[in-house]
Image (cartoon, rainbow, N blue to C red; front, side, top):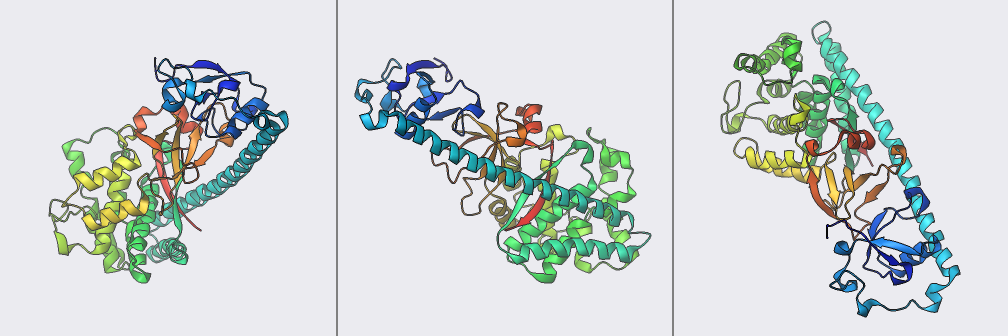
Length: 428
């Protein structure tokens, strides 16, 4: 018997512990899922009030205590419901309560979607500002740097206002992912890590500004090289590696960037063991801000590589940082970054223990294993996609993390996220 093979039983034979598969449209029943394990008589009363006489169960997913060896109900569990439980009035009340709970969740999720759209709009507006100041660096450097400082000041103020700042996912299509969206991603992640490390004031601002301008040297490289998704030739790779040097030359020419900011521009590809570029610097030669931006930059490059087909999931990117960059990136900072972003960072596609697939959209730092997940369910219009807070669903847990290449395109479209991941902040 396969893991999804169904067996039909009578509604009166249904017991807590049975795993059911409803064959009616999601909008026609009050449950969050169409497949779930029965946890109480209240669930059974609600099903009975729907007028169901028979129901499909999946034996291999049922609690063994209610199943016999042949897949039928065990004799020990074959107890008739009480007269009180079997009354139509009790069934109707149970169904009404379930519908009210479901409608409350729908209303809450609609508000969350509205907030998410507002965050996406703020992200795109900020990307435009980043693009403008980057292009103005030569013609009006003072105004350009002032604009960049304004972006960073707003961000730092939000992070300092409250300890509860969530990093949210933003939908970015492949065609809209540029050096400017990358710069904003790295800035958000760098400020998040800096604040997690209890850094404050001017130090955080210097780190944020350094992150925002870390790739300005790429403005002096051929656009087709920056946009190339295929593997670079050795000559192309060597040319790309000149961008930190080109960046520091531009910084020295405009003469208005602080030394710490200039250090980030020049050294964000240096490693603690001296294997980085352009100078092969080591350990103490790398300011704390440089080490922070190096982590954020590496993480975003893993999640958003030139060819999106080579992207790794946010959770896998964390594992790569931890395992593959030992001795290169600051280990203490990497561990802090993992804690700040969560075990299942926003953007991680997961399969839950009930078989549903969804995407992590936010994480509670106090419950890193139980994030909030938006669910993929073609039965439900995407604008009404359900979300589940695993802190509230004790019978659910994350079963596995799915790689981007394992997910069908319609899943990304439904969940409202492109192949590229954008990160923006929200203070609570």
